[in-house]
Amino acid sequence: MEKLAIDGGKPVRSTKLFYGHQYIDDADVAAVTQVLRSDYLTCGPKITELEQRLCELTGAKYAVVVSNGTAALHIACQAAGVSEGDEVITTPITFAASANCALYCGAKPVFADINESTYNIDPKSVEEHFSERTKAVVAVDFTGQAVELEPLLKLCKEKGAILIEDGAHSIGTSYNGRMVGSVADMTTFSFHPVKTVTGGEGGAVLTNNEEYYKKLVLYRAHGITREPSLLEKPCEGGWYYEQIALGMNYRMTDIQAALIISQLDKLPLFRERRKAIVARYNEAFRTMPELSVQEEIPESDTTRHLYILRIRPEKLTIDRKQFFDAMAAENICCNVHYIPVYYHPYYEKLGYQKGLCPKAEKLYEEILSLPLYYGLTDQDVEDVIEAVRKIVENCRK
Image (cartoon, rainbow, N blue to C red; front, side):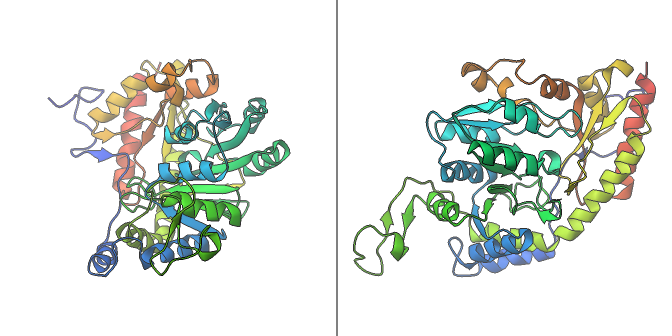
């Protein structure tokens, strides 16, 4: 049965609108088709081409593409030397992979609180959570806004830790004029379908450090190498290779790489459209005192992956869940990003408890993600605004 709108009347839209969606055009299809008809479906020339494109885009010296964003985080932690007994500081307002990467290496995730205005990890809270066991900080560019990279880099340098920037949301974003990917010790990307640029799946690690780069290449492919300078025994012939480390099978296919390369051609269009939608949302919602919008630091020129609307329950007769359901009744399907990582049962069983990050926990209770993607029409955007306005007007205290 179709839900009634909040006022008992017809919903704003007759068809459903989702919070995220990929954009695929004929050029993308042609790029994938070309690979399917080629000699290489994996481990081929498109891998190198994509890595070169990512370096050109970001200004990073090295790029290593992998099967997904989680794999990128895992090998970044491996390259950083994260191991049993270490601690890795991250934010709870993220997908679980940002913390799981520490667990994969035998380390302990430590959760620092967020900045109440930007929703990104707070460098002051990060500093408070440093210990002699802290090996790395995984700082997430939540929604696409760059974290406060300069203070985080300074802190990590002082403490002897490595800064891994989880840029799953932030391809196309710059910080103080430098593209994300070229600033932190290592930066990871994701190419999941709801991200700005997609390969169906896929990920990458970017770095300016040659030592990290060589490790990343190894850990991506079983720890196996044919590189003559790395072989530990005499080469027996053209077929010869050695496993010199314990890696994973995190290789990307040429099919994925071709799609991502084609998508990167459209990144300027994706970026500008997303920025325009965010500007229109902000214009509309800042006039409603029952709502709050995410603030941005001046250093970040942001290509936004998510648009987060924060409700102020003290000014409304409904809570976030009811607001979420009311939007669904208007045929606008939102989402919530994210459930704090340590709320998950797996983390509870590891001993994590609520109360660790009060600002993050309060944020979770009050947010929902509105539709934001390149294919949204101007009318779609106005429908979202109208649905929000309708709910606020009917539920205002």
